[in-house]
Length: 128
Image (tube, rainbow, N blue to C red; front, side, top):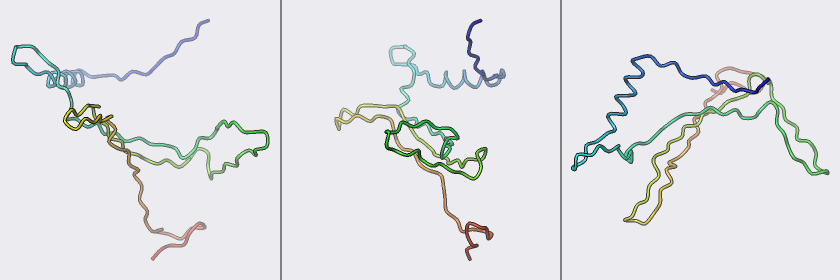
């Protein structure tokens, strides 16, 4: 017997492949001496959103001998609350004029909002 790992790979259509090729070719520039150079991508910002669970169902802890095990509760294990973040990054670079290094991290922002309760529940009264 041997241990293997199998990963899921995306199935690309011919149109997907052509779109990717066009995107890559769009990033190639012709230099003054006739050489082909890739765009340095200094003017691109990559933005993505990510869901995070507030907690995991099973979690390991390292405790001292006199510490108590933490109590963790939730209403339903299959429906743990999720929150969404948006992150933005760019290519790291050095600014020689200001003599500063930019690490590429722009920010990460939480996507939540508070709104009044629309109906009465056992947890809170409806807000007017």
